[in-house]
Length: 225
Ligand SMILES: Nc1ncnc2c1ncn2[C@@H]1O[C@H](COP(=O)(O)OP(=O)(O)O)[C@@H](O)[C@H]1O
Ligand SMILES: [Mg+2]
Image (cartoon, rainbow, N blue to C red; front, side):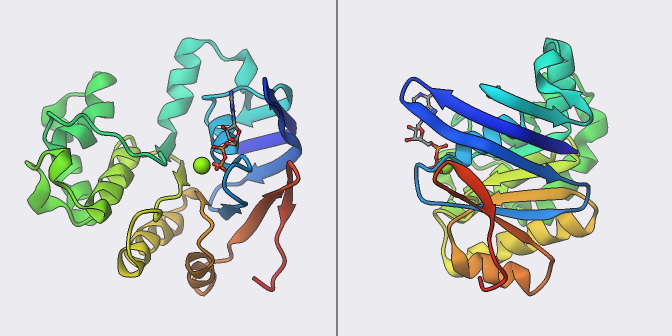
C-alpha cells in the first residue's frame, strides 16, 4: 500500500533520514520508535505525501508520490487516515463537526453521512460529547476524537503519530484496542511511539513489526523487545 524505497530526507540542517526502505502491506501492523528528533514524524509525513523525499521513491497505492497532480494527491490522502501528533481542532466548532470536517470539505452529503458519524463517535466512546467544544475535552477525549476524524473517510491505512503521548495508561490501552480492532478489520496500521509498555501490550495481540530509527536509518527491532 505504502512503499518507501531507499528514501533519504535532508533539509537545511542536514540529513535526517537515509536509505530508508519499508513496505506497509494491507493488514500489517507496525510501530515506529526512536528518540525524540530522530525523524518519526518526518517519516510519517513522507508516507502520506506531506513531504517528498530528497532521494529515493515513495509509492502509495502503486503510484509514485512525485508524479501525482493535486487532485490525485487529494484522492490518495483520503485513503490514508492520519492522527497528528498535535491533534488540532477548530475550537469554535462542536466536536461532531470537527470530526465530520473532512467529509464536508470533500463535498459529501452530510444528511447521508450522519449515521456513519454517529456510529464512529459511538465506537470511540464520544457519543455524549458530540456538542462539546474542543477546549472542553480531556486529553483522552481529544486523542479519540483525532482518531475518529482520521477514520471518517474510511481510509485503508491509519498512521498515528504518538497517539498515547498525553494520556494515562488506561486510556493508552483503550486507544490501542481501537487501533488493534481497525487492524483486524484489515487496515494497515503504523503507530509512532516510544512507549515500550504500549508496544509490549500490542505484541500480545498482534504480529507487530517494530521499526526503529537510529543514526538516520530504519532498523527492524529484535524480538527481545
Ligand atoms: N524542513 C525542516 N526544517 C528544519 N528542521 C527540520 C525539518 N524537518 C525536520 N527538521 C528537524 O528534524 C528533527 C526530526 O523531527 P521529527 O521528524 O519531528 O522527529 P520525531 O518525530 O522523531 O521527534 C527535528 O529536530 C526537526 O526540527
Ligand atoms: Mg514526532
